[in-house]
Image (cartoon, rainbow, N blue to C red; front, side, top):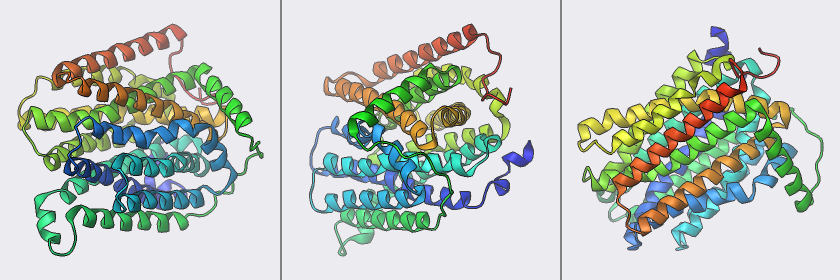
Length: 416
């Protein structure tokens, strides 16, 4: 239905949610580049950089049993604003001299509770028939923020910004001050979001019982045919994306001989591709055909292998844009299918918490493996070849599983 995929037909408040999400994610992505520059300024070894993302992500895994019920227990827009306040504390901790990895962990703590509130609010505001379109717009905003945030971060650590603020403040401190203002803008936008009116049954506040309920919800989603397959794809995708974020920076330095700020712009090229792929998926892929995008996962792994043969900037740009576009086309339909199935099986907050737990556990495992390989001085190009090959094989296994299920299409019950 074309009307369902038109952004003007999405519910009131959805566009404000997009704006708030954009501002917060913009600051998150710029902060990562600025914090990497802080590590370099302190003379820390290169393998500390992926540990920034590791420390940011670990709260998603450790707090997953609790943030879902928290998101369901109160208006989600209010919780999002509070969590942006927690992110600002992390930036202030960097000002105060706290180790960058520890300060980034505090920012991640705020992000961990922010995520189920954000995605849960989508399922509360948007009808099921519009979820692919809504996810397309949300992913466009997320990846546009990643694109512009990476570009902003690169600009904030560049020589020209240092010259611009010379005499006023230390360049990295001035960069942090600008990011504080961005987090403040996101919090103001979130406070403008109304209450969706969705209410859920009260749950226990005992940690042990919450943990038991969370693990039961996790098993329920994995054992569901639609939920388990889409969860496997998104889990793999986000682990790949987080590792690729740092691999591209190192590849740009070692193979293309670029500086940190220039390598950050190559990350932005990937984000441009994801925006294009996500927008196409929102327009072209209906929920009833979501699983038809699975072969793109195999192509994604093969493109990562092909990257190791690229040694010029002229070839790097289209290759990275292609990687991003394939990723965007893959993840948006899978994410929409997972959200809809999780909402049917669990609740908005709990299903997103389960999804976040698995996806961020994948990020932790892949980043830890990547950081360990760097600490052991493993050559980057063979490492990327093995990485891409494993992704392609994993997606082939998921395709085989789908064919053996005997389903022509994966769609939420009631829409087949």
